[in-house]
Amino acid sequence: MMKNFVDQKKSEVSMRKMHFISGLPRSGSTLLSALLRQNPRMSAAMTSPVASLVGAVLPKMSGASEFSSFFNDERRRTIIKGIFEGYYADVGPEKILFDTNRTWAAKAPLLKEIYPNCRIICCVREVGWIIDSVERMLRKNPMQLSRVFNFQAGGTVYSRVQSLMNSDNGFVGLAWASLREAWFSDSAKRLIVINYDSFVRNPAIVMNRLYAELGEPAFAHDYDNVAYDEPDYDAHLGMPGMHKVRDKVEHQSREPCVPPDVFAKYSDANFWLSPEGNRRGAVVLC
Image (tube, rainbow, N blue to C red; front, side, top):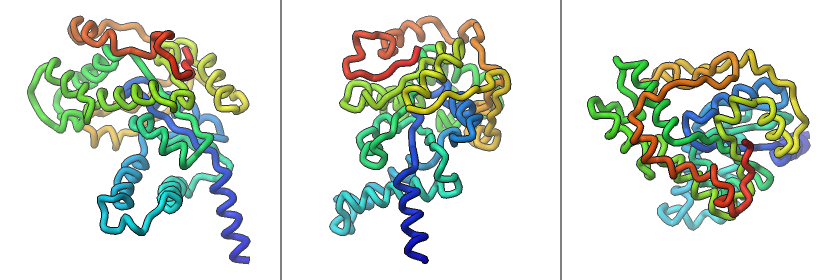
């Protein structure tokens, strides 16, 4: 009887559908998760710790560890998959999981090993507007320091932009570099890129196309009543309201709050807007 139970659990794990949400910050990933959560067949949320857990375990199974000789690729694969399944153990096996982390795009080959049929949904937005959005959040909370800038005070918009765009650890730069790596790699066909402006202007069209790409039946989402908020997490970041989603999905025009030369400096960074640059067949929903 115990063997049958174990075999059933193994079967549920192997059949579970898993996809990933990645891309750039301040580009609609939380909104996307909030909409997916409306579908009772799906489970999604803001950034999870799973990518960090996987990143912490990998070195322990590599040549950097004294125990590396105890591991082969099959054992590594089983352990990494166990992290996912353990973290989501409370989610029914019938649900489609979407795990969010901006670094998943750079880990596409690893994800393919664990979940061969997974797709990576990458939310994007013009880099100038992402920087502008971060600055706007800072100005809404002038009495707090943000983890995004290592809780450092002072500086100007220019020094903050330099920090944001650092490709090793910058809030925007690391995500941008991860996406660019996947975009020009063999993993590009695994990507589904959602442009923020198209998303908020035509959410129903974008969501229907997304479902079609995932091979899932369409769902009637309520775009006038979207709810999502993580106040405790945002308070910990020092950016209250960062992940709060407005009730209605709509485009809102506004004037930028950063100098125009910031937009000009990163005008060429929006590589997904160039069809001729999409040489590897990434799917772009726009």
